[in-house]
Amino acid sequence: MQQSPEKVLIIDVRSSEEYTDEHIPAAVNISLYELENRSKEFSKESIIVTACKKGGGRSAQAADWLRQNGFNSGWLCGGTTGWFT
Image 1 (tube, helix red, strand yellow):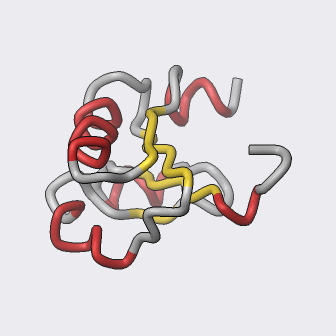
Image 2 (spheres, rainbow, N blue to C red; image 1 turned 60 degrees about the horizontal axis):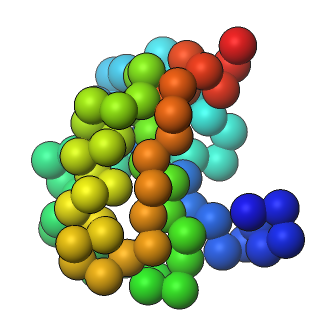
């Protein structure tokens, strides 16, 4: 990620209300429920990191779906909470 930050896309898969409360700088808000429809906007060349509040729930589900559909993705362990601690 440090070598090619322009290739990294952080997607916050929480609701817009949760995102507004606190989010990782530069993260885009695409809820888990919108992900499939919005995935056409992503490049398969990108490294996609999904994030939710604590990591491992919605973000893991989103990363799994993305991987199954040909994207290079993973989820942020610790989520947004971990990012700010």
